[in-house]
Length: 157
Ligand code: HEM
Image (cartoon, rainbow, N blue to C red; front, side, top):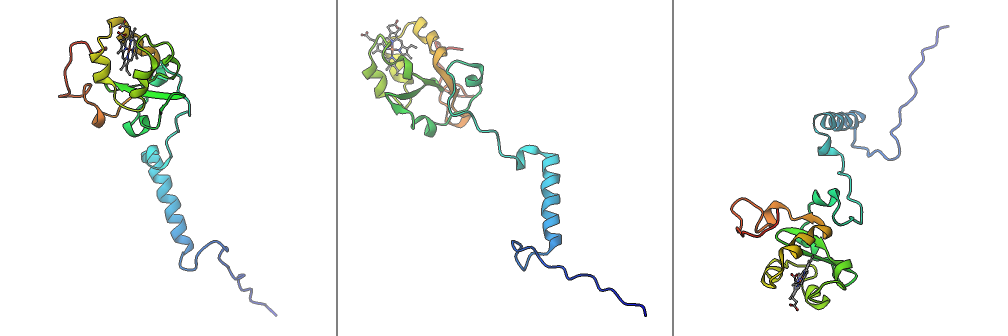
């Protein structure tokens, strides 16, 4: 006598909620794959920057750093400041500064453009900034290096 075989009962995985149909899951996976194909940046997390940036390296030139991030580096052991929209790590320079460390620490974690300019620094001092560069402010936070920004004749290239 022929026996009729019924398919085994399909049970949902323990993690799947009762309201979620298997076809919904496939649709999500498909959409993610399609988005990845069209624009990988829309779904992949961006590669995080290394925790420590070596000042003055090509990598430092391309890094965008917000004022909020600069403000976290405001101590003698970790001293950043902004001069003409560029972000510098002056930690290793504090003890070497001919004008003393105190004045530089006053601007740790902040914009020091006006202070730097009004201290009558030589063009040599301005050029020496490159050694300490770790990044640049985003366009919307800049005062100088942006279209329509403050124009000064002696801002370094
Ligand atoms: C936070 C920003 C800074 C402030 C407020 C500041 C302030 C000063 C002041 C007040 C002096 C004059 C000292 C005196 O005449 O007794 C001075 C001198 C000097 N500073 Fe700074 N400084 C800053 C950053 C820097 C940086 C980043 C450099 C080099 C990369 C630098 C290099 C020099 C040099 C070389 C002198 C001797 C004069 C000259 O050759 O220009 N300073 N600074």
